Amino acid sequence: MDRVRDRVVPVITILAVIVVAWYAFAVFMNAPFQRDLDRRAGETPTTMEFIGKTLSQPKPTMPAPHQVAQNFFENTFLRKVTSARSLVYHSWVTLSSTLLGFTFGTALGILIAVGIVHVIALDRSLMPWIIASQTIPILAVAPMIIVVLAAIGITGLIPKALISTYLSFFPVAVGMVKGLRSPDLMHLDLMHTYNASASQTFWKLRVPASVPFLFASMKVAVAASLVGAIVGELPTGAVAGIGAKLLAGSYYSQTIDMWAALVAGSVVAAMLVVLVGIAGKIVERSMGGRPA
Amino acid sequence: MTVNQATATRVDQNAVVEARQLGLTFQTNDGPVRALSDVNLTINKGEFVSFIGPSGCGKTTFLRVIADLEQPTEGKISINGMSPEQAREARAYGYVFQAAALFPWRTIESNVGLPLEIIGLSKAEQQERIKRTLDLVNLSGFEKKYPWQLSGGMQQRASIARALAFDADLLLMDEPFGALDEIVRDHLNEQLLRLWRQTNKTICFVTHSIPEAVYLSTRIVVMSPRPGRVTDVIESTLPTERPLDIRESPEFLAIAARVRDGLRAGHSYED
Image 1 (tube, rainbow over the protein chains, first blue to last red):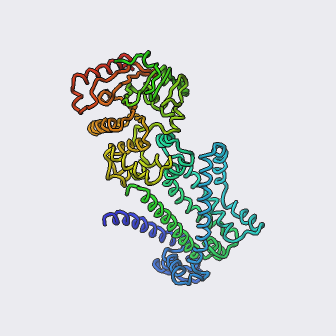
Image 2: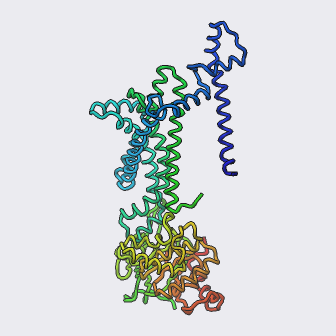
Image 3: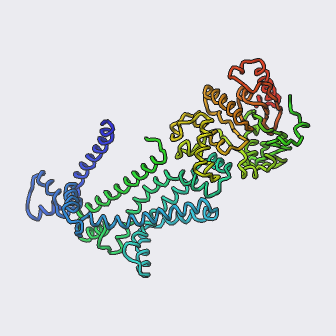
């Protein structure tokens, strides 16, 4: 009970502060346009009326929390999941390419890390390129990937997933290089005294030692994958996905839709990170981890 | 009682470790460091030999040379008539490190079974040997526990069991009880002696504790730093059967005094 209170109270407090600040900000941001409207209509509302109006504009500069919540609720729970207006549908489209890209990215990251740890030439040559790859803005690379792949006939899920891959392999590669090198000298000496082969040392020592590093970097990678999938939807003229929803919202000034899509994106990201965290806990437990 | 250089150079069928003019110089950024210099030593089958000296005297380095974890730069060393590398490949020794160095993701039994997995024994034979070695170190009943569930002393016993699992005749121990408190240490010393008598193994034991060295050993090699070298070799006159209170006997104290003299002669007490 105490534990719940210790965890929930701080989170709720921060949430309340954010909501209050958000309302204040919404009033402030929407006030000039509302004043303009009132002046043209020749109305002189009281302060309370004025505030009420700023918080219920159909296309506000800054939507109020309840507007976003209502839109999010309607488009998540009250629509058929196959409907093009359903956030569940759009989230699923983005999620599917996120998961595919995340799988590719994790596999690629592990592969690169194994190469770097075992081949001296790769260790010297690959790391700077990997770091350089992440300094290129993904917004610049994404359209090129889409266009190039479309030219050779690959469209749809794969190009989007590849953008996720591009963002997610990096944390995994860096984390796994660290993880595979984490066994201490004494453990390596021990394997040496057993005359263990390189592959025995790899499977029995390096791989198990790297597991905590893998899950830590996978948490970062899965969030990056989602960003990649959303960014991948922007330049493709995609008709579905959270990215497409954001883009459409900005074309038609549907600010409430945009914010609702943003919330959907955050919910998906949070779910993914939590899922990876739970998977990590389960694996850790099965490897004899000390319960926290 | 001292084994002098002349007798040490004889070729002995019983010899497990034979070092001749052994030297090792590390190349460091501050220039070469002579870790070992002109070490002549023969360790016979069934002996319990302790290496004692201040840090930097090369006692651990010598053990690591035997284990093929360091390569000597001068002289010769043979283990069971083989080079250290051949001996390692033949799994001629078990090695116990300063820390237990158990794999945290393995249970005690699968930690002990690790070397057996690596040499590719059948599951049944692994189980049989794990049971036998855990019995030897009094850890039966802890097979399914993870290392963190055991005390430091029990962890170190598990690591001794792991080193015994090979059933090699030579056991190399590098300050295995150095990190444990004195009460646990006494207890483990007693158990180690019992285990040595039961298994008739040859044990090389590195320590920086004079009582520990005198209590355990049939022979004590006193070493001194800069460069690391052997300054004295002391044969113990204590009986094989050694209760803990033998440490108050005049015989014990006389040997301890000689070890201390040897250390002083090697300038071990100066800085």
